[in-house]
Image (tube, rainbow, N blue to C red; front, side):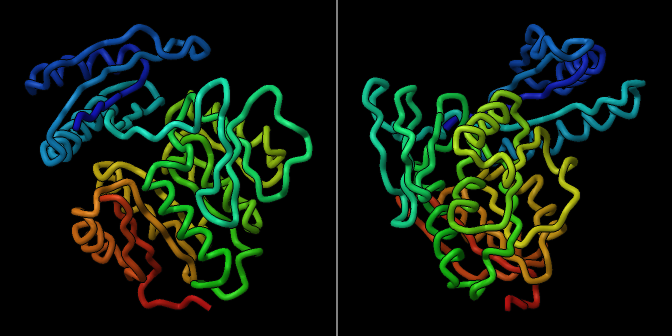
Length: 305
């Protein structure tokens, strides 16, 4: 398993961080060409690779400390952004490019891969998806777990019949699939948060393709762009990101709300459960599918109507 750590920021801050990383013996380190031509000055990125999940988490703590040092010394008001991608976190294909195949990840939803010749008479339970530029086709076990949990919530297993009034946060939304699924299943509205610019653009396109722009908002960024509290938070993320930023989940969950997290192996279920229990959440149920795990949680003490 290989992970990629990407840090993005203005050139001066990136150059300073590059030297600090080298002094701290982080190798290899690569300084890329400008990552965003629309930003002035153009953003640059540093990327690092790691194969050991335990070492990855220790590295992230050290890198976060170095980033804080750079931001304190820098005159720039633009913070450095960091994201982690599991390079082995791949999904089954939606079908060949010439003949994409619709499928039902849960009985209540049909996912139809986008083509230029899609018919106009799609059913209300259909999600059109162009997954080429972001994670989230609906076929990966972790995504399927989230959809199954979402489907059970929408049908009143955990919240009675209040889902139609709920606001949903899809944190790390990728293609925007979970946000769109929530609205298709009856949620009032949803927000998708995505730190990767290309993925955020892909999510906005998918939302538009489905005619859901009035109910779903896509924001580029991380927890700094989340100011509201939500009835439901979905986070399908790699373990290192959940451990690093997961404490924000209870901070943005309503007192009666529910949170579902996935993106980790079932061997980490108990570690994840312990982490979120210490963060003040009650574990409602554990799930696993094809060696992947998920947790359904609520604030402690539990007060779902």
